[in-house]
Image (tube, rainbow, N blue to C red):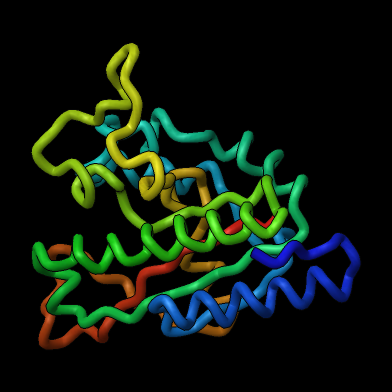
Amino acid sequence: MIQFGGTMDNIKQFLNTLEANARDIGASDVKIISTTAIPVEDEIIELCKEPLCEGYGKSIHCPPHAMKPKRFRALLTQYENAVVFKIEVLSKILLSNERFNEFRKIYEIAAWLEAFAKAAGFSKSKGFAAGSCKPVFCPEYQCQALIDGKICRYPDEARPSMEAVGTNVFKLVKAVGWEIHKITENSDPESVQDGILVGMLLVG
């Protein structure tokens, strides 16, 4: 693995490498942003309660167990750059049980980029996915990380979602110039536009 030094040119080169790699492993588009552009709001995690998200309270990476927005804001001050990536998904898939296969792709991209960045010397890099990891990895089992003395069954892949730590993904997506449409279980797949799933890597 090539080690990238801490100079401005080398960091820019590495960010470009991350962008290219994200596309190579399945992202349909990628943006490099300043971490100051990431909107974090306390109210976002309240949306997990009403209507109740299928992962709320059932995963170590979901509220109320996940990192609180206040702590996430503090964490962001330790980073300068983030890689935001998306995959495009048909609305009919997002409204079916097939959606978990698409969510898994976001987790895999986030985990791969995190591992790549750490191997390149950016040891504090941290990936975030979309949606709850519970129905993606452990739909039929209790989250093992919530059991005393146990650890996550998928430590190399499971991550908190961006929303779980308070990121307003809709605002972020619009800020980077992507289109996003609200799709709920009550949406008609024939009339709603296709959706996207978004993940992020903090690079440090």
